[in-house]
Amino acid sequence: MSAPAAPAPRTDTGDPIVTSGLTKRFGRQLAVDDVDLVVPAGATYGFLGPNGSGKTTTIRMLLDLIRPTAGSHRLFGLPMPQSSRAVLKRVGALVEGPAFHPYLSGRSNLIRLDAADRSADPRTSDRRVDAALDRVGLLGAAGKKYRAYSLGMRQRLALAAALLMPRDLLVLDEPTNGLDPQGTREVRHLIADLAAEGVTVLISSHLLSEVQQLCTHVGVMHAGRLITQGPIDDLSVSAVQTVRVQTDRPAEAAAVLTRLGLSGVATDASAATAELGGVAVPEIVPALVGADVSVLGFSVTAPSLEEIYVELTGEGFDVSG
Image (tube, rainbow, N blue to C red):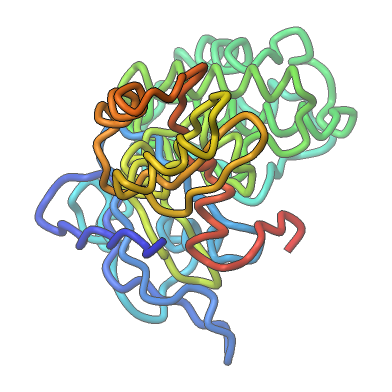
């Protein structure tokens, strides 16, 4: 499958994130190579790739934590880093895991963070902190010292820190890292709720199932390059779809599929399968029935994100890499 072309960056718009040729070198190592990223307003954008593919380095450049070697980017249509002071207060972020004072409680850590935000009203600090803790399910453990928190609780506290103030954009680097299955489901629900409220969310993840469940858009990183991006439904449609016809006459069904122009036709004891290509789905079953082939079942399946990734890169998705 050929990679769908990544759309050209639209630097004249107010899209929450637009990059142009974003590049980062560390000595001789090219960590991020000429990335043109577009995150539309209101999207839940899955920034997908194995560990080491350049996702976190890209995010650190977006948030002005490190400067690019080449290229540029805009947040909400404003050039960075010139507009950092005006723009970054609209952004909540969780990058490379949480970092808090170990001898303070969860609540005390958040109070300190809230006090450092010049845009926050100190008169309503307690209310904001408790609301953020409650939203991530930590209100009951708010008085517990951070050093006694589990990895999952620390991740939740970092999410609470990102939610202390209303945000137009959330940038979350591996937000379910360290969470148990229940915690993972709760974070997914939280992200879905935020997206429903109109918050744009960029989720960096190496978990393909997580991106497939949560995201409206996806960008796929490989070896420092953005190899494709766009609405996740478009990515699935552009990939090779498979037709499966369950029948007691698989050889005859295969002949009909071949005659219609489907490719990769194969049979087993109870079905014929083929790659759909450009053939219109509504044409297939009538053609089978017209050839006296009994159709006991019919399905068209799109490949999973993992299968798409393998087709785009020629490599397996090594989550430990």
